[in-house]
Image (cartoon, rainbow, N blue to C red):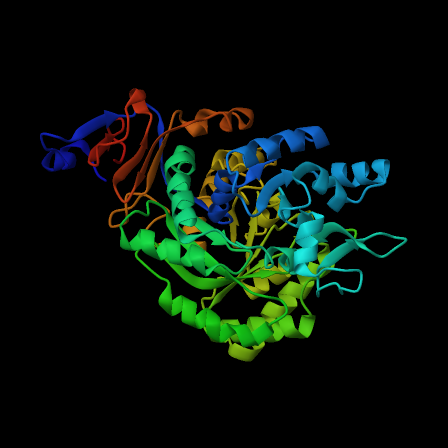
Length: 480
């Protein structure tokens, strides 16, 4: 950074010199809610895209044809409303409908795109021992036939999902599968979107994923900064915290860490109005996590009363432990949280959204913007454009996806802004964003992404990535 004269001493024979000619140079984007590990689903599971029983069958059978020795089948993307309608119209349970697609000899467990419901066939439920006598796990639900009470094959929220998933021969991806998924995420997804840092809220227990990240970091193959959030089981309360401490000490590296905890505060289905945790257990768990210096990251989708319950837990932790720079956060913050804004501010709780309501920006709550990939596409300009259309200033929205995201990851001294001494995590956009209308912003494109000064994506003048040294020159008189 500096003027043209100051750049001269840095130029060598192989230095690539670029005049951006009015394009935008920004800090690398930070996505503070990104399930990067779920890239493995699109690589190793059947992806259901056609909302019809015949379409699901064709996609599933085509997938099975590539794996004739498969002992199970996993899938993602089915439509819950459609399957329930088909079950009502045909008089067959969802489990029987899935039997028609995959057969009765192989266990099948498919998850919705939103990841809050699974669809299991008869064999999968038999293997798990699920019957009409099986109780609903706390905060989770087994759909049942209204007449017979028999389970239908639809299981909602992780506590119920895990009943069938844990009974599978391979309930989780392998270390190698996770490694391939993260490498694909880094090569095929993140750099094209200008994303150089992500917070990853893990929503199930998975040491194999943590082992994969450790291996990639040891092999110097990580080209994104990862803040990995260990998942807290709502049924185990404080007893699981020693395990979190052990993993925090075991799994860490140059570009990843595991010192935050993801808590699943509310379920997705308003039909059940589920608050997953017992409130007293939640309060004691959050307080103990805070005492152990973990950052707590809570998933909450409303209504307003549930945001207050989560804030009650944070307030209890503050009362028990006193203030510290914890940067606790609630994600999926929506309009229903607006009445709780004074409590967010008083307790210094960060609000994360896709994007957040304008009221949170206006009130100067600690905020950041995110995608919830793969539930949503994670091009940051999508959220930035949406925020600007709602009346938030462009620079404010950019900050929520850059420096404020870095603050959420405790990496603001390393990245999040373009300053002397920070890592060169940078993104070049194809236009001057400040000259675009709100409607034009989402159409802007990433031309180049750098991570730690290395080019990880290069579509500037059609060049392929490869050069690891560059000087970016703007117009005379501007900083570089």
